[in-house]
Image (tube, rainbow, N blue to C red; front, side, top):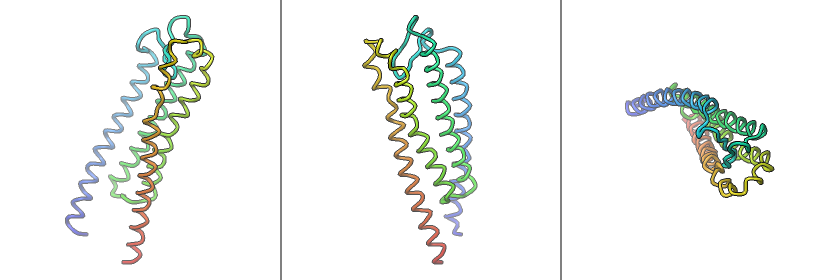
Length: 177
């Protein structure tokens, strides 16, 4: 192995370990933030479901349950993304750069991110009767759509495809030499 390649691999491993610890820290902050949001919603006395804010008597048991599902399921999706990022950085920290496991972790990140719009749609459809009663809140639904998660998932899916092509090229090179 050339000295420059060993130096590069060492730098990648160091950076990956640092990122792994950072993602673990983010996971802890996410859990604490979700618990804080569940116990002390902000603003107080308001439950926002699919971008629509419910206050006072409009907060029925169904709205409260949908808000709870939205918050907990959203946090679960974010934790799953962080889990796969932590596993990916762990593989990089071990020096495993172009492997099938890396491709699998990147695909899992993509598919998890693409579940966010489905969660948003399920909550929106479940709250449809309550939202239709809130005539002045309709304009807030579309800005709450998690389009960034959908686009990010597509980018990660493309990245997994590129990583898989790199892995296959590396495997072919190993066979030729």
